[in-house]
Length: 169
Image (cartoon, rainbow, N blue to C red; front, top):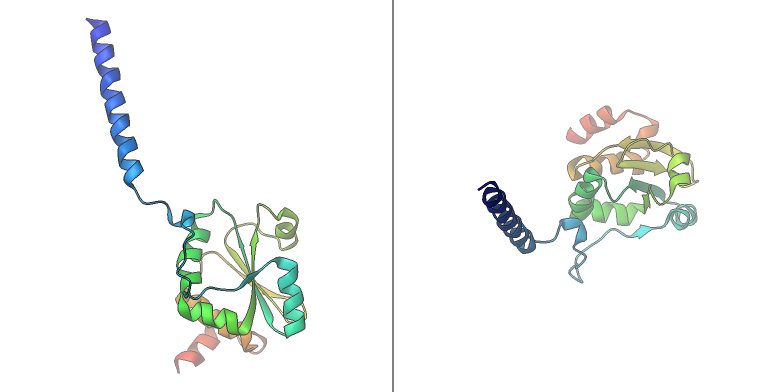
């Protein structure tokens, strides 16, 4: 009798497991695994680190550096929301050289920038000097004013709070 009960429980578990597999097979792939993009959809022009720094100096543009990792949940949210926003895309492409750095694959560079959490965004001057950084996920409605604050050199004369007050006025 005990053997029959154990066998019954095993069959039930196998059926439940098969049902779970079937449901998972029907789920859409995770957003970070989808690579198809409409050919005419706008996208940020990303550069490798050294090429981006060199371009910034040559084109006399500030550099926006986004440090991320494949395992980082908020890095993926930033990629799917912030970096897909039309206003952010246009502003970055027009006014900055954009660089993405995978901190797991570029450990020395991550150490050079003192990366202790992800995502982390750095701003670098046209001369290649670090201006400052912003840790964590930045939604589009906050990144756009932050980009304007850096691009217009307002960071040299006022804090970000004052800049935002002036923008609203």
